[in-house]
Amino acid sequence: MAVPVEVQATYPATWQGVRVAVVGLGVENLPLVRYLVARGARVVAADRKDLAQLGRRGEELQRLGVELVLGPHYLDALQEAEVAFLTPGIPKHLPAIQAARASGVRITGQTDLFMRLCRAPVIGITGSSGKTTTTTLTGRMLQATGRPVFVGGNIGEPLIDRLDRIEPGALVVLELSSFQLETTEVSPHGAVVTNITPNHLDVHLTMEAYIAAKSRILAFQAPRDFAVLNAADPVVSGLAVQTPAQVLWFGSQRRLPGAWVEGERLLARLDDASGETVECCRRSDLRLRGEHNVQNVLAACLVALRMGVAPEAIREVVRSFTGVPHRLEEVARLDGVLYVNDSIATTPARAVAGLTAFEQPIVLIAGGYDKHLPFDDFARVALRRCRHIVLLGDTAPVIERALLRAGEELHVRPSYQRVTSFPEAVHAAREAALPGDVVLLSPACASYDMFRDFEERGARFRELVRAMARDEQEASST
View 1 (cartoon, rainbow, N blue to C red):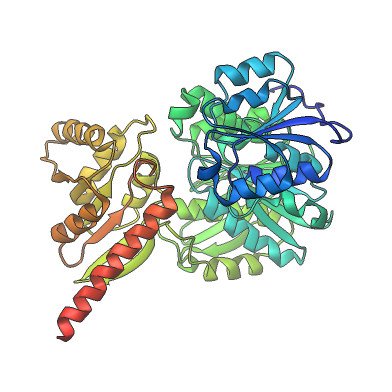
View 2: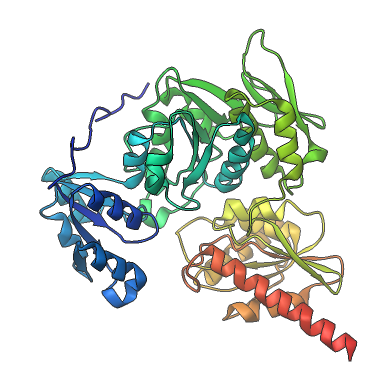
């Protein structure tokens, strides 16, 4: 069993006069700056962007009176710090960060601070895909306990601003990314790992480092805690030895204690011996597409049951939950073609889940920012499921080569084209689609080569599709 390192490490008894560097001034760290300033810390706020690029965030930092270190040499802020809070996505192997750590600076993140100070039980959910859906479902199910429920972390607003309002009787559900976890030395009371497939290798550099970051959600648990793990994922199931907590398994096949699928029924048992098997819901209750969402529901059900939610309340949530935006989101039907926004599919594995969620022929829009992930498995599934593929972005030539290799292997000729802009991709997909098809935006890549994030990409897809639908309506009415 892994032995937690530095688990006893604590923050200063008081922040008064402590020199703290906050590196990266995005959504997560601005509330942290406010928290630290209010407690008397001498905050140095650092970011690669200049003041003009920070916009309103920069204006607020100036009003707070913190010292600013901006521009190319922003990591100089680490040199005189006692504690440094890093924005989640910054590579932790950068020489300036390693040098600061070696000189005695405590390198940490806002998530670690929040979980140490939070008086309520925390449920943490991580995975390469399914985090947001599982987190949202879990939060809604836990509301049936009658206790106040706070949902945050990698989704929504950071909760550090609400620490004083989160009483011990509340429940907290956090979506946790690998970037947040790698600077965390405390684990949540309940930990969920949905799956682990290659992701963020442009930052973590190796799959081993990525897995190590994910595993930290379990590494500091206690025997009174619990972990919900994917029984069918060999990487995730292999992490069970890293926690002393009770392990609950989920998957299509029965493994006790845990949740599984039996015909149309989603069943669960929290005790592997004499415990009662309960029916959480039925497949027909789910309004979410895809087998991957069945697994997300199973994981959420286990957390809810473990925290005392009745099966009837679980079923009610499942029946009413229509999903989270940008996740197999049906946008419109146009000329007999269904347009679906799955912009969250920022990895090949996530795109495969989207491709296998439909029985209809698919016209796929794929490509984007390169996270240095393999596309061979994705290409094989895409050739089997797609009528046509539209490629764009930095990874277009990489995916094209994967499609050609897969075509040789499967003895099929790939039908694809490369385009240079996102609007061109949507219009090309419309031209290729036939009545009864699905036009699916499931890029298998991040969006940073063209958009701020996957949400902006998905919103642009919606906008373009709905504009085409309006044009079609106007043309038919004249």
